[in-house]
Amino acid sequence: MQAMVLGVDEQESPHHGVLAEADSIDGLPVVVADLHSAVPAIVAGLRADRPDARVVYVMTDGGALPSAFSRTVAGLRDADWLAATITVGQAFGGDLEAVNVHTGLLAARHVVGADVAIVAQGPGNLGTGTRWGFSGTSAGEAVNAGATLGGRAVASLRVSQADARPRHLGVSHHSLTAYGRVALAPADVPVPLLDSSHGDLGDLGERVLEQARALCTQSGGRLRLVEVGLDGLDTALAGSPVRLSTMGRGLDADRASFLAAAAAGRHAATLLG
Image (cartoon, rainbow, N blue to C red):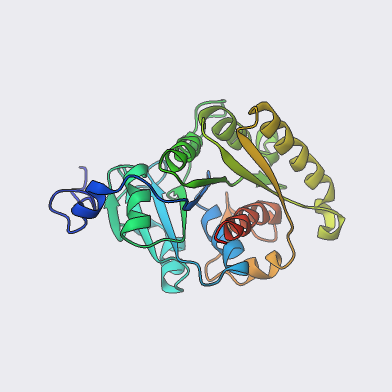
């Protein structure tokens, strides 16, 4: 029941020659996220400062496999917020197909001409309430792939103000495990500066900053904490061409989640020079 597709790097592909020689993504910012719902918020944060950036989404196979299941991808492509989607592994249906995250990133850089790549699983997420049993561990592996290919990994934190499960309140344990344990390569960790100016998010902001500092400290210097201001990001998120929703919660219900993802996009913009 697997779908037969033509990989961008296969011998029959017109891009085989380019990818046969490609071995680096030349400093390409690679923003990694746990949930599919982070993708439009990351792009919104990036476009707030660099609306001209060419963004490519590399969709991994931890969630839904067909890219057509994603209304988010369709809406972002229609609005020209994404230059292309590359489905990798067992995922399929993107503008291009690739064997794995490595060749997906190489194709983003050398075939599509990406300025920024976003790596996240498709719609859906598998979790078992255990430290290691969740599909988002692939976020840590994507950090490794981006760094191995000479990219600049940006670890977008999964944050929530409204999740009823304590393990996901503030910085989710998924981010702590994926970036703190699975990722072995350097990455920047953008932290949204949530304070009293953001209504009831001030206390949460202190918790998130404390958790992120602990994550980076325990990494022994591998993870670099970057504090990101949020001026203008609420407006950027409100202007998204697709509905923002994470775990069934919209922007009003879990604003911190989308601001954290937008902060990662804003930091990626600074890496473009």
